[in-house]
Image (cartoon, helix red, strand yellow):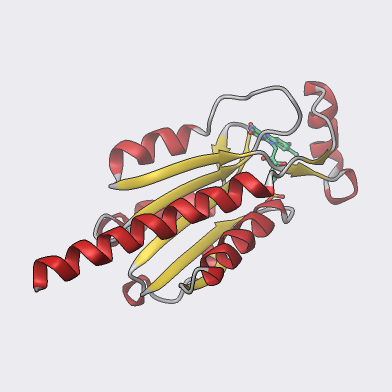
Length: 170
Ligand SMILES: Cc1cc2nc3c(=O)[nH]c(=O)nc-3n(C[C@H](O)[C@H](O)[C@H](O)COP(=O)(O)O)c2cc1C
């Protein structure tokens, strides 16, 4: 079984989350390929997909929403999970509007919104001004335990489907 983990990231925090999910799946003996959403060669070769995006101004990044819309027909045929990388600091933010939409549009087995990371030196001047205006705090708020746990649940879900299929075929 080959699992695609495709991410859209502007400043790297989401890449770290995607790689962590990939590492957790590898630890469980699964074949997971982590790559930027713009580099996915061919969806057909994957048996399951995990797609994630950073959230900016309440939305997933355009490359992620375009990818999902373009490949909707293929994505509904495989076990699919979605994640957002967004909130920073203690303040909770509304989840990305696209995640809400895709939950109804696709056959999503599970989704998660993970806390993200903000590093001042990686941001443009206008981004820093926006961060200042909303008083968002800088720092790395990614909770690796939560990400590992979510990846573990995906591995369990895939193992359960494989067993089910095996029983049906016997
Ligand atoms: C200008 C700007 C706007 C943001 N808007 C949101 C938002 O609407 N909702 C949210 O949850 N996070 C928001 N964030 C936080 C980012 O989603 C978070 O830092 C994310 O982890 C960045 O991922 P990346 O480094 O992969 O691009 C914003 C960050 C910046 C700099």
